[in-house]
Amino acid sequence: MKNAIILAAGKGTRMHSDSPKVLHEVCGEPMVGMIIDTLKKAGAERLVTVVGYEHERVEAALGDKCEYALQEPQLGSGHAAMQAVQLKDDNGITLVVNGDVPCIKAETYRALYEALDDADMAVLTVKLSDPAAYGRIIRDEKGNIARIVEFRDCNEEEKAVNEINTGIYAFKNPDLFAGLKELKNDNNQQEYYITDLVEIFIGKGKTVKAVVAADPEEVQGVNDNVELARANKYLRMRINEEWMRKGVTMIDPERTYIGAKVTFGRDVVLHPNIYLYGETHIGNDTTITPGSYLVNAVIGDHCLINASEITDSEVKNSCQVGPYAHLRMHTLVEDKNRIGNFVEFKNTHFGVDSRCAHLTYLGDSEVGSKVNIGCGVITVNYDGANKYHTVIKDGAFIGSNANLIAPVTIGENAVVAAGSTATKDVPDGDMAISRVRQENKEGFGRYYLERNRAKKMSGKK
Image (cartoon, rainbow, N blue to C red; front, side, top):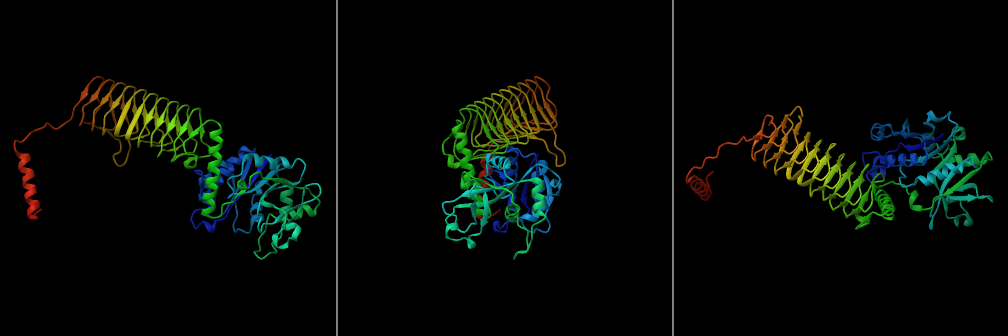
């Protein structure tokens, strides 16, 4: 079995945040969640996240995506791995990864797993043009790791080596837990460091193999908000380039924000300053214009999403949405619809070839096909304690500035006259009118305005 232990117990003091570092988002996802998703793509079958600071929040964010182990107190990376006791009797392969390195590819994790075909331990390394004060990877004549030398202990020849340790490892699981028992905390911090396993394994004559990451930026860690922004930009451009090579047109990729789970059909056009996150899918020949924000949205073919927000909802084929529309909470818009300016749908099923052009709120509603919703229509669905359902059947016409007091049903081919408040069902084919009869008072308008102007001039209220 392929396992993974994710070290995610720390607070991340350099983030200057009350939120655990691993919950800070990269491309719209908590970085530890992104790491777990990538590990699963690499073949990890059992994952244990070691939590500590604000562990309830981390567990709530990740849910059932993994198992958990609690590290309290936090006594170093080796001590963290020791807490994953549910894996101690497993005979498989285990990766130990950090919860703040979100940009590593599935292919890289997969290479670490595969490295144990002919090694006892694998270390993910990277070659830097300027390795600075990082510890150096020193290899033997077979190309395996002979030792890791801290910079302060390097001689001139060793300082010239540009390969460093990333702190991400693969182990045969029984060897990992045997080695953890031998870790010592005789250091200034009195902590147990997983890096010491390299020396322990080499001392036992075991083979420690290096796997070199192809891109130094792939293994960048996140320790503060500057590094968080850097990781966001790197991963965003990597995602964008991948989709552009698959045919997605991006007018300005540097200002296009796409999450790792988002997918696209063919002939999609993305304008700048849009945000597509979660499990969003954009269908064929669909255009998204500036100012749009989509999370867990499914958009069909031949659509235009114009400066609108869509969350946890679906828009089917040949629809136009926006500008400035808001669809949320499991709304479903069927084919051939126009949802116009400043329209909000909440938990609403909007039928085929209907229209809702502007300034309308439909909540908890079922709308049929070929329905016209006029300007300023509101479903009054909440009485302060409960929410009620509105049904508008096929072919109905709802005039402007109408209030539909739920629960209410508007029948097929029924009409609610403009300015009306519907408090009871409207049968098929009927018209509901509920207006106060207009009465014109001769000359009163002029008198009213002149009186108010005189009060204003005199300073009276």
